[in-house]
Image 1 (cartoon, rainbow, N blue to C red):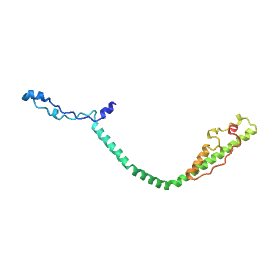
Image 2: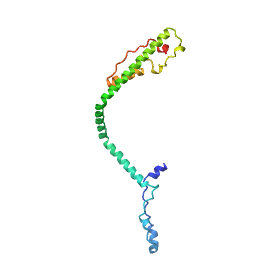
Image 3: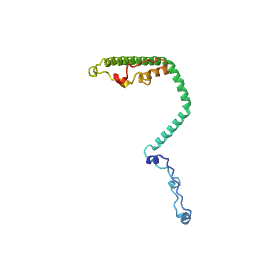
Image 4: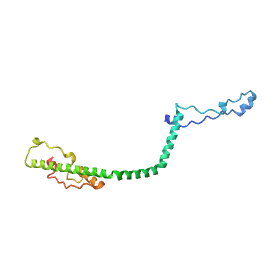
Amino acid sequence: MLSWITQSPKHKPKPVVRHEGAVALVGELLSPQAPEEIDPPPPRPSWTGEQRHRELGAELESIAAAIELLRPEITKARREYSKLVWAQRGGDYKALAERIADAAQRLGGALMEHHEFIDRCRNDGVDWRYHKPVDVKPLGNIDEPHNPLRALIESCREQQGVGSLPAWRLPANIDLIS
């Protein structure tokens, strides 16, 4: 609050007005009013550089107002620029998205092989302590519709038209094989 008060504009002090009745009684004995009483000087700044800070604040407000006035033009120019950039780089990004989808499918395939291998070991009665399988639970159940890999591939398909949805099916419940 104190800084707000010190930053608020200070009003120029009012001139000293002598009482008319007192002036009439004293008459010519009264000395003339000092110039500072008739036209008082503006108040001193509250801190060093106050005027410069006020000028910068006013300039900042002007710049912000100018940006708001130009915002429709800036938005239009940004859209046009984005279209041009995407026309140049869109093919590169589509290839990148295709590589992402392919990598996700390969990882999904490797996970399927992992699940099948572990399921065969489980069916053969192998004791868990001897083969210590990799924990793939953080990637979720691969054949569920909301699996992270499937969601990644679907995003590549929806946004860039690349990749195909795999038909992953676990050989057994994930809790049995992981």
